[in-house]
Length: 115
Image 1 (cartoon, rainbow, N blue to C red):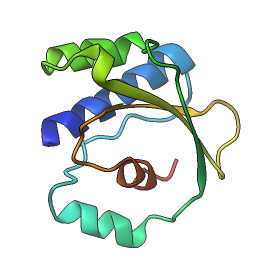
Image 2: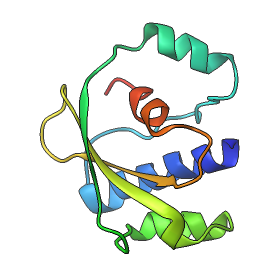
Image 3: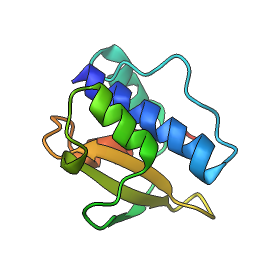
Image 4: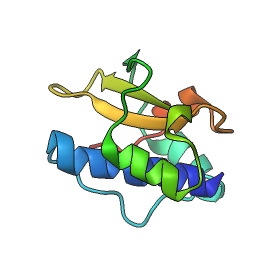
């Protein structure tokens, strides 16, 4: 699970920097969402509402495809979402998630750094 989530975060960061060219920093060190950090983050980070729209099947950012393949997953099994948070203006965040991920879509989208 950690590898999947780390891959999703890495793919998100790559898409953010290469495709969208947003001015959001890459999170360092990577979050350990399996450990105690998750509980701490959930308790202190502000909650924001968001809107989600799913990309059409067959469309996938190249960074997500590369990461999926490097982790041994089929690109066709990756779901791509545009996520627009209520406190952000402009381009949505692009999130790639494996269809069978043990991390729910809601958990993946509600725990995010305050940027």
